[in-house]
Image (cartoon, rainbow, N blue to C red):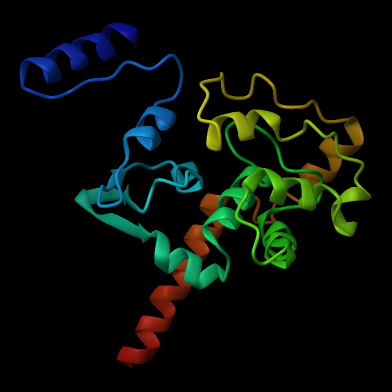
Length: 204
């Protein structure tokens, strides 16, 4: 695998591409370099958690793409840019788990109810941790620290390396709620399905 990556990088460089080697996932480098008019091509919905990313093209089969535009996503979810980042952090992602029985749908309701004018993601996370529906879970103050480092401070880390371990009870609960929508990708796909249904009803 490493040899294939090295060969691909050499091929791209020889053909005029700029190649950046990253110590872990490339998301942070992409987000740090992303300009408002740029388009990120990625199958990783976590990219929308970064505040610099405005448009994502998610590859499908046969050369097709789903296009996610930040303004449209925020409009559908009825939350701010900062709250979308907070939602991505407290929901399951590559770096931290969600709290037991708090999937992205429930988290969306909680995050949406937080202080409307707050633009500081760290303060939104603090508000989330003391919300009545969250504090009863007795979360650690550092539970989302790894995600904060990546998505807010853009510090490289190893995915899953600091994910807090779940107790047997939490694991059973998580397995029992497996049908719940728990990742940002899930909610984006639901939004896309809703958009297609609405467009179909208008055409009909």
